[in-house]
Image (cartoon, rainbow, N blue to C red; front, side, top):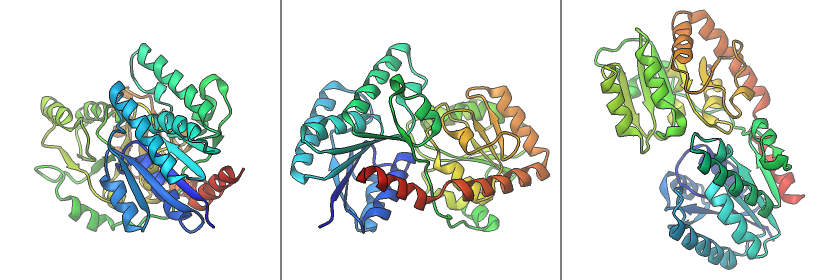
Length: 366
């Protein structure tokens, strides 16, 4: 009889953690009886799981933001589900689901509790008090979990009190892309007057993604259009910022696009201006699409992008450095092509989905 494997994730969105859970659930459904517990409702992740025949359970009280009364309710909801489902393995993802889920799993006497860190929450740009609270919560989660996976070597090196983790890099198979011409038709004119060269980003519109930094940097350039793909609570503020910077005619917000990576070949330059990351899938996808990348030096990004070899790295929040990097690539199409080719070679060699699945199974069965 198959062991039951239950994934727990805070948000049912199609972000990095959601993609990670989906890929593992899909690849492991023949080996294990897979169930996914989603905080807040079904969402895009739940729809994709159902399409693959993977059962998911909604935990409405489990939400990303910290609210004491809801968190207490979420804990008891998780505990009740775990006692009912009786999984052999619980794999928790993201900070909130990690802490509450790992504690509930221990109380439910589940022997194998695995926690994957998609970037330590205490590395986010928050107050010192919030950093301390998140550090202690991360430490507690590590203690409750039996095994801890970090998706980057950066997070392994920065684990609370240097406690042991095991790095398992994210991996993926070759995505299916539209041709450049097809992708541009899907996107449509990026600006009131299609300016030809396109700079693009795909990111949840959350403060951690640093889209405000990208808008300020792009405002300092004179050529091209900027396409921003993604949804989130920051969209209104970012659209207002584009108007304030007088670049609204050069910027297009596309919102959420299903399978957004299929459009990557439309971009001449791909940007990830994050303030905090784990190991972003979108850079692996950009590599397969042979796009030149400009990205922040945060989290596991330097494990994917080698500065001036397969892209350009800049400090997070540094508008001037990001603007200079954009201008360098705008002005040098030969360099863009070289970076894109080098990044594809790196991704194909080092970030394999079968290898990610193999290492994860080893951890489950250890």
